[in-house]
Length: 329
Image (cartoon, rainbow, N blue to C red; front, side, top):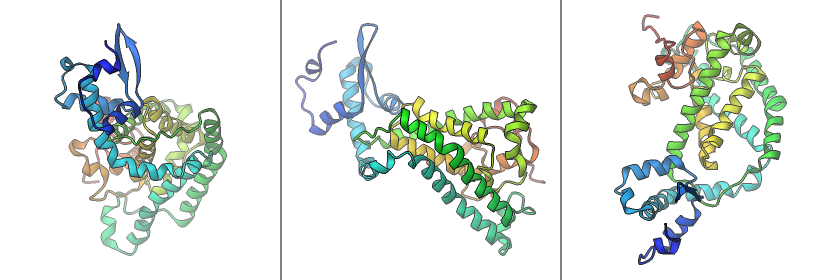
């Protein structure tokens, strides 16, 4: 294949396209005697190339130009947000940021459901959305869950994040990811996390010693509520944290995509444990029953031997562990 100048000779491009070609974190390598390029957002590249009128017969140069053109337009949407985030670079690179970010987002997502627990006792019409309306956590139980979560974050999660900060310093690229890349890569991370946790979950239910030693604590509450989400053993907390941290690394996601995944992951986890099946719950917005939602996971806490996947339903359906809530119950 010719040189870079030969590929683009005789063409006129806007400066933004030239900037895109050299700033989207790609690197060249040889594969069977030809040049290929690995992009920072592989899911975006594959999706765009498969849906555009850019054929491989036009050559790699045209494909790269089409990709760059669409990536520029997509990146411009998120660049102001990314510039704002990068303005806090010193804080983002602090070893305190991951643990505080995780805890604060978690508590922020729990607050609306705590408010529902408080209001539902005074507004009977709200109780129709509660999956187990006859059961509600006491103030003492809620406080115990909060203290347990703080303990796990300080004693176990924080030392791990410090070690990660030391061995793998945070790097913030100047260019934002494309919006499509954020959506696709976040979905890919959720699917990977769902698979990882499904395997872990099944194993810790099928092996009695693992269940009694590490997972039984999380099943103390058979009627789920938001603050029961992180009521788990140190091993379970660290395992799920490892899965969540590994997914963006394995898929080589942009840091902004990584943050988006963490936020969505925490939200889905809290929502699944909320104990409420609301009209706008995520599983009602996603078609074809692909997501189980709070009824799916609440039933797991009630019966123990079904619905092992945290978010999606395909693994439970494929392996025969899916159980739906009986409307008569």
